[in-house]
Length: 157
Figure 1 (tube, rainbow, N blue to C red):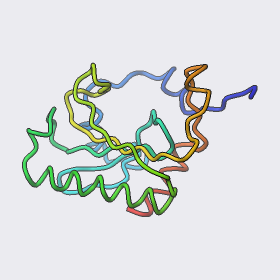
Figure 2 (cartoon, rainbow, N blue to C red):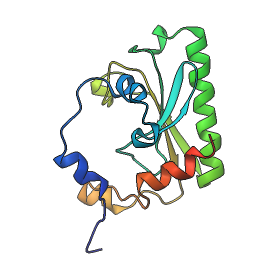
Figure 3 (tube, rainbow, N blue to C red):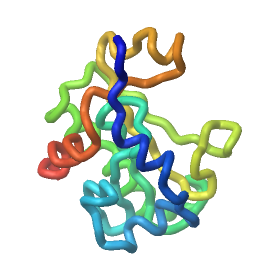
């Protein structure tokens, strides 16, 4: 392979970095398509991860700014995991993954990019989706642009 096409990365590289919590700020902006917000529940929402591990990498977060599962009330917690389940169903229907990685990174040392606002990652996986690129060149290859993934998924929510 001579070229790796990842046009969405240049916007991040050259762009001004956002301040504040993305899980608090993005829902307030009212520009769901631009922010890749797929679904809004009463207490939680789902969105695409703009730096995905795989195409269709989604996140579910509560609107309320809390750092741990223990801080969520019963209604928030129930809706949160019901929305995780719905994300899995939508991804199964639209992308036919072979499996999923579902995870919550608590603390920076555990990999949390946003460590003070709890969120759950839903990463679809396919047989053979790992190749030499991440191992040898520390580069991920994504076969679909985020806007295309968003358009395909949002209609199912």
